[in-house]
Image (cartoon, rainbow, N blue to C red; front, side, top):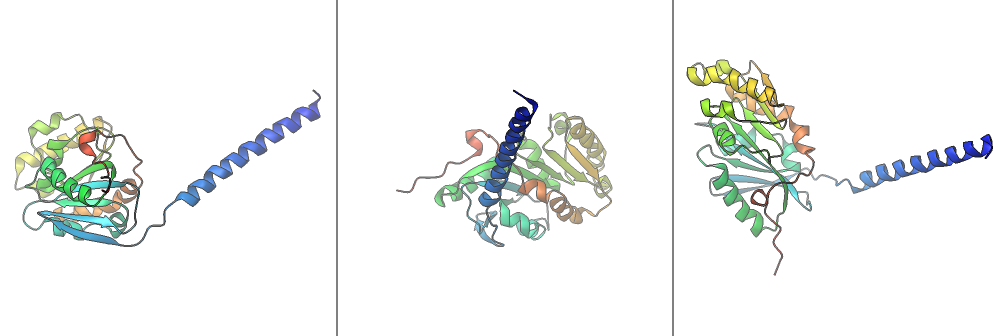
Length: 238
């Protein structure tokens, strides 16, 4: 084969590769669902469950645990960016309710409404972060600790790259043991591949900061394999 023939073959291969890339990009653009700017609020027992107006084949869900006093599920809802509520199911839980109990109650609602899930994340603020640390598992798509309460037993937890913490230990001056443990918890998370940030914000200002910082991370979480106990199957209508 002469040089001219080889060049034509190379050119044809390059053109074919370019066409394949263009087709893949076009398919992604066409398959991208237009997000409706809205969500529905459902009060289920002590939980507040926010469902996007946009209909998805299956949904990412985030369980968010509040704290003591003002940091109720309703207050945490007010701190959450609308864009997050338009893209994901968010279950707001009181700090007094375990992840297991919250998930069980939420899953009854999901089953009754034919809602299928694709991955599960968990976030806790202040006292609610104890529920997150207690339930911690590598199966969660995202784990968030927002100026968390903690105790010695959780410093030994083997976190992973999906764990994010934002804190200000100065906010815990009235609780010296927690204040002393927070830098240790941050060090443990970093050594496990996670991410932490120490800020100078007031305790009640950190949730909004956290949600805005990790907004796109939460929205763009790719579908992950999680064990059967963490996902409910879509119920077949009868």
